Length: 114
Image (cartoon, rainbow, N blue to C red; front, top):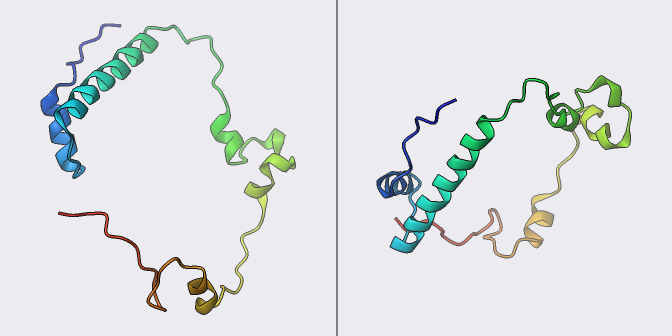
């Protein structure tokens, strides 16, 4: 399999950073270019492997309890329980545990400046 991909450039990083509303320094951009190209190089190396005779791992089905052979074990009990509704905690109790609130809503520090 050939690797026809173009390497990640600083312009690519700047473009994605702007989309994500991130401000990166020149050093951070340079490091990001290097790291992303390193990741893509590694993925290209992995794509060269012949996996035709490798059995797929079952982590996804294990996590969500789809593997019928493992149903009933404690590990997957959460995936098989019935959904049940119940009463919510009273707002006053919840607000008592808030670091800061106006009595109705949580107050959180502003994280976006733009």
